Amino acid sequence: MKVSLLVSTYNWPEALELVFRSIQLQTVKPHELLIADDGSLPDTKELIQTLEKYINIPVLHIWHEDTGFRRSAILNKAIAKSTGDYIIQTDGDCILHRDFIKDHQRNARDNCFLFGSRVGIKESYVQELFETKTAEFHFFSKGIKKRARTIRIPELTRCYVPKNELSHKLRGCNVSFWKKDFIAVNGYNEDMTGWGREDSELIVRMLNKGVLGKRLKFAGIVYHIWHKTASQHNFNKNDQIQKEAIEKKLNRCENGIHKYL
Image (cartoon, rainbow, N blue to C red; front, top):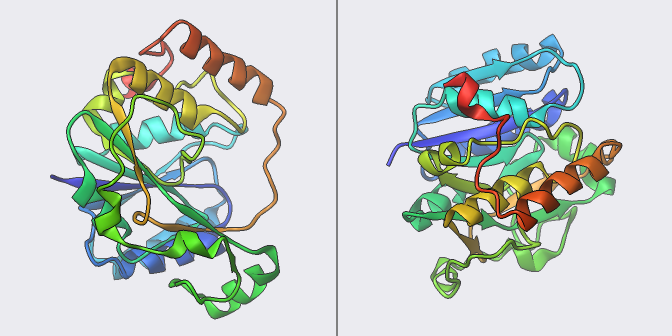
């Protein structure tokens, strides 16, 4: 299995630096790192050029012009350029547990996608986080909430079986899938712009295609850095697109990754 780690980012190099640090600490390294950049300013590119020298894996920075929230498009563009057959996806505001890659890779199976846990880093701790450049956390770490989610017991993960249902626990910052399954549903739906539903709508189409989802409970952990919520001005439109995919049992979108392949 050749694993591509996909990280989406937008104008937050301070957070992205901590993500890089957590990638350095991984017990199992991905074969490549893809940075899907939704139009960040040049300081993000400069950071990537500095840090890529220290992680000892190929780094590809995929950028497009900032014309609004177009996360679906930049993720499609990045995955189109990936060389891995398995994609592990997170966001540029999520610090990875040192066994994050290991857990996703170990639990990967045919005809299945995975989704793991997200631990919140408190707003009150963010300034200290960036000052100390902390990239490792555990149950007793300061500045986190919902501590039970920090517990890693890989043996218990086996108790969770793949299901053909959309879980409300699913987050796009902690999901993995086979590239062939992603392409089969034509990737992210680029009709969905602005924040909301782009990840779950993708998963709806995968489920409709017959791909099952497995929760990585007690494994596959990320630590999400608090930030203000993005504008939700397009949420209702995106929500309607997802409802249509559910009601019509759609397993492919029209405006997807195919145009980059």
